[in-house]
Length: 111
Image 1 (tube, rainbow, N blue to C red):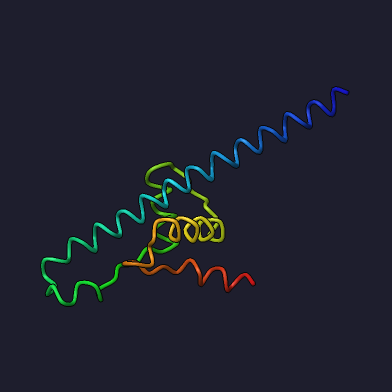
Image 2: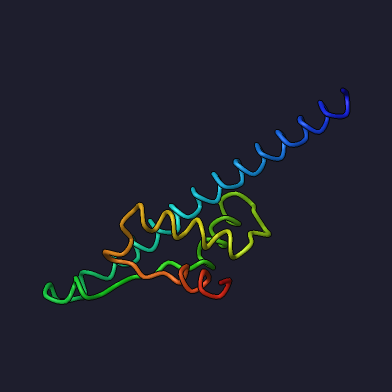
């Protein structure tokens, strides 16, 4: 009885830890996407108005990993996990309108 309770508590603790890690990584991804968009918009004054829609920024898995390190101290973020969350946040924040990403390249390498 005590063993099952300890195993259940351990499993719950690991689930909480994993959810917290994913939440921090999602926030780091949002920060990286926002930074890429700010960098892109900072270059707009030097680009003619007719060409602004053709100029694109980029957000990479390495950007997400660096942001996770800078903001949350997450030193060992697996590239596949960062790529999965980047794909999710990229799609939900309509990143395809103005940004490119290498997150889909990481998906193809694993298949």
